[in-house]
Image (cartoon, rainbow, N blue to C red; front, side):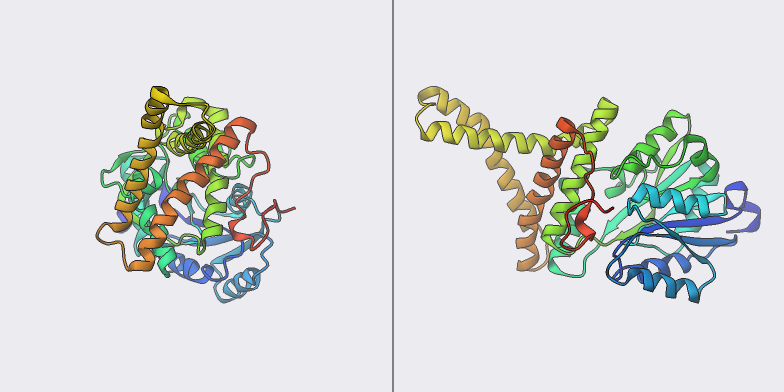
Length: 357
């Protein structure tokens, strides 16, 4: 970027990354950050959770090899707590959130700074392009990139630049973050959506730029994926409790599927014991079973569509799609009914499925 195009947001860039049990991904993520070509000073602040897989030692080695990397502790292991710790420890006017499961495309930061300057937005985000290394992970990635999988948010494949509800990761002006109070540390998932809501309520703009691309590596196993989506759904339910109709209608589709499935089970039982018969049984069967049949057909069609990979990947697609929807939906209903409470994303904690200390 020419020097005469640099203004206040470009005087320095602080990349912030919360890290927990990411030994297999951290080095690639860090190198994608350090490879960003900028005409301003830059640093990367890693907020280290209590990892058990050697991630902390790897982070310390990377920091010893490059003075741009700084380390802070995040003993609570919660993402918004780690992000805030990294932001407070950082030095520059522009904050770029990055994830250890992601890799920035070449030129990402420079383009984002230009978009901040050009639009006057407070937060800029781009497209989350999911990718995979195994048939399972590639199946998950394909559904992440599809509106059928994650509901069609702009950053899952949008092509039209403009104002947005939220931003994936985000390239943010520090002054605005400080104005709205940084991330809400009481929220464990969906913290980015909630932050962007406060940014917009404060009169600032959140901007989507499809020329910005980040590669995201999904969870590597079915169980970890189910845990992740249950926790995410629970916190979306909590956000619905807090913010009601400000949540988009797409968030209510998975819990509707769960409710429909539960109703179908109940109807099946009443039909088996003879409690519901005749015309009423026929009408209820059409109302309840046909939508579920249509959903099953949708899953099979998505798995069979061109670009679905080999047989193993297609089988995983047929299993992963309902797993994503049902796990998210069950979590959502629990979050709405009783709140998310201490629900955490345990998908990076090995066999543990309880909150960290």
